[in-house]
Structures are given as C-alpha cells and as structure tokens.
Length: 212
Image 1 (cartoon, one colour):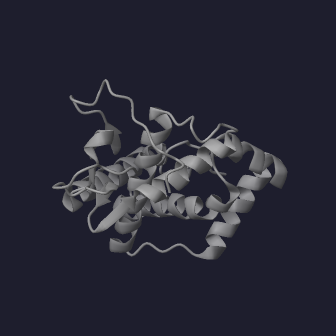
Image 2 (tube, one colour; image 1 turned 90 degrees about the vertical axis):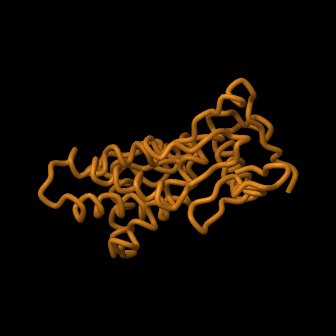
C-alpha cells in the first residue's frame, strides 16, 4: 500500500513510486511584469490572488488558526504546490497519462482503511491542512506522478522513476517560463519551489485574507 501524507507535491515527486498525499497568490502593485495582478504565471495559466487567498484560508481554518495568522511557510508552500500541480497536469496531458475515477476511488479507500476509518482519515488530513473535499484532486495528481514515472523510466528503479518525473517537471517549468510575483520571491525550477530574492529576503510576506 502506498505511504500516506507527503506534505508537499515536491515530496510526492521525490517519492513518485510510493504515492503520497499533500496539503494542496497575491497581487503585485504596479504593472510591467508578467505576474502583475497575479501570484504566479505558469505558461498561459495564472494563479490569482483570490485563488491563493482561498487556499491559505482553508489551510488556516483546518489547523484551527485565524485568517490573520498566515505565515511565510504556509504562503510559500501553498504557492509551491499550486504551481507544481499545474505543471504535473500539463506533463500528464503531454504524455497522455490518464487517471480514471475508479482508480481515485480505490486509492481513497486504501487511505481510509490505512487510517483506521473515515473519521480518523479526515482527522489526519485535517491536521495537515487538507480538506476532505480536496482529497480526490490530490489523489489524481498523485496517481499521475506515479504513472509518469512508469512512462518516463519504465525499466528504472523507484528512485530512477522519481528522478525522471522531477527532471521532466523541472524542464517543463523552464519551458513554460514559470514566474511568481517578486513580492513573494523567485521560482526555482530546479527545486520546484519559491525562494527569496535578495531585496525581499528580510521582508515578511503577507496576505490580506479579508480583502476579497
């Protein structure tokens, strides 16, 4: 049975052979950059401020924290996951990797059994900031990652399949010109994560969760 609850998509990619479950941006004042008005841009797809607001609010609510209690870690990890999810979906489309609802249902049932029942499962994922309503979409991406490993490195070891998926997603990120708002740092395609910029490293990130 696949292990449960790798917190981030990056953790999933690092362990693509064993499907994990992860938790799941903000406006930029002014204009003149590809990300103006968006938290991030991935090819022709944009992650809007309202989308990130909603994701961060959901994480905070599930952790029993007030909406004003967002942290740099929650913000950047949420943005990392949203960007990488788009990249995995695009790569799966290109590789013609398909996931059926039956496969999603089967794996969800495995996770529930592994947790000791529905209530225990919801408690566990809730503690990680994952709503039960998000589980199916998360599982779909997890299965895509596993199938991508099989497609890209069919004769490889689990580690080799994982590496192949990570490299392919990283290369796709570069190809599509993935960018994040400078307010939140810079996107590093080699690590699939948002890192600080030299002029923002000492400035705390913030989000107005009540503005929309």
